[in-house]
Image (cartoon, rainbow, N blue to C red; front, top):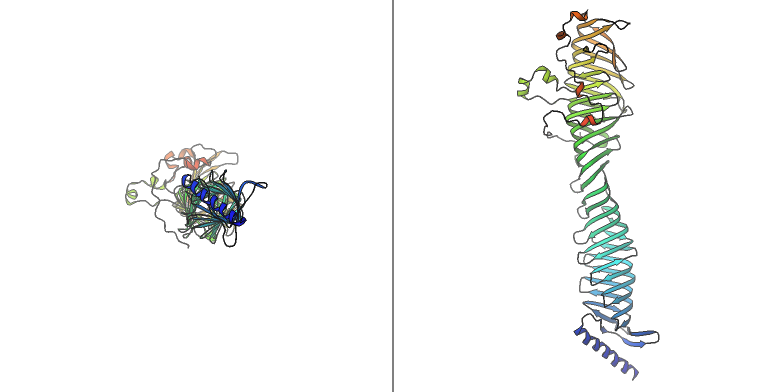
Length: 543
């Protein structure tokens, strides 16, 4: 009789709740239970629902079915505790299992703990304790959790899942493990459908051949493509790329940087900076524009190379740097200017070139106007120019070894006493040697001409030497001409100063270009009255 009364009471409660549920859908509904009991002394106000045999406790509320081995249902509070292999399902889109669960039907909030496992079609979540807000469709956890989708495992100390947006917010010690990359972050918003992540706080992404750091950004986990900001850095193809804003695309093997850009080559001890850069890994190349300049180590000193556009190519062991238009170079003891530049790190060679003349320019420009386009270098008080200039360093060392000038080689040095006087040497070619970073001697050959001011030991002007010869040798001291030796039938003499007309005191092709010399870092970026050209198409190879 006791069992029958209990069963009848259970049915009454069940159907009674069903009846109320039909009128008020917010009330938890008892679908089934193996047995029913009450214990007001220990559990006041609770309906104790237990499993019996294969019949488990089933509670239902607003489309969610909760199965368990035992539940304490407080009908007046519309609240229950469930324990024992708890299963929470909502349609066919969400299934959660746990050891224990508390559910408040009044506000649609639940707490599950003990081996919590939440499963959706595109992902799963494991944690110790999970909170569920059904009204807001939000789940969150404050204990370490693990999310697994089709390709990645995501872990964090805390997290929140926005079901409507299908978005996770992972907080504290966030880690993503994928066969192709790993991510660590302070905070990460992850959209399960699109597999996209928004990054907040210090974040690292480590791929098979790239490392990324940022403090704010966006990353497409499927495509391995994203934008990165705030102290952003990419270590890519043995280059460290920094900038206010970075873009990376792994499939295209491409990266780009904008504003305050820096590309560091740790192997060759060089840095390239500018305000825009593109990096092409497959071609071992980088293009930098907008206030672009490079810094190379030479003679334990910084050699600055500025150009409208800088292009770096080649693998780490054979880097080549090209500069196009308005090229300037600056070192503590060297200044320079040219239309273009070529630097080969492997053989230690810097070439300065001028832009080829068009047919029209070749016809209408004067010789002086043509020579004004020649590359030029300043060593101390000496100005040297020519159609092509080569600076070479010692193999395997960052020390200047030699200087070569081809075509219309011209040396000018303002006389130290005469205000209007200039020592001048012109020839077809020039070859020089360095010693401890300073010019030691120069050889000028072919069609050589000289104008040189001669002084006595007391500093009185003796006269002006004008000589024509096949070759000559110049010895330098402190980067100034100290001694000149003439070879192969020199033809010249010394004239008193008053015997040489002012117009004859300068050789053909004389151009004193000191106003073009960059003496400070900011001088590298002074805008000159030159026509801005389009960067030519460059054939980039791995040679």
